[in-house]
Image 1: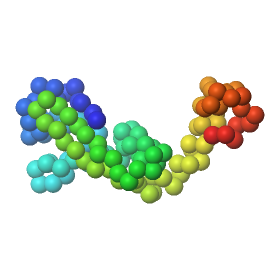
Image 2: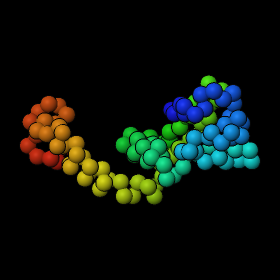
Image 3: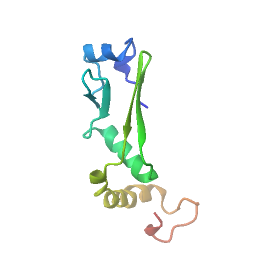
Image 4: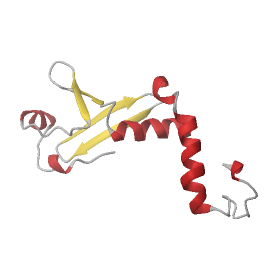
Length: 117
């Protein structure tokens, strides 16, 4: 859920469109911009895709809330995005996470090697 600060005083979604205060991480769809989609080049998209990947969820509802409106878009796993992810996550885990948690694993036991991730 995202609560855009720029929309805190708006009465409705149409006002966000009219005033140009639609959050930059959203694409407007439909005839009047009634529907939204998360931009595929924004950090939030990568965050949601990473969460979908790590949890094996079938979809995620991305919610944008302000006092005057709520917008929801359903995000599904992007099969193209996922293709390069496992090697990157493995590299990240070994280079960054293990340095911080080593020499202990999730159970607090001394790790003998870095393959327990």
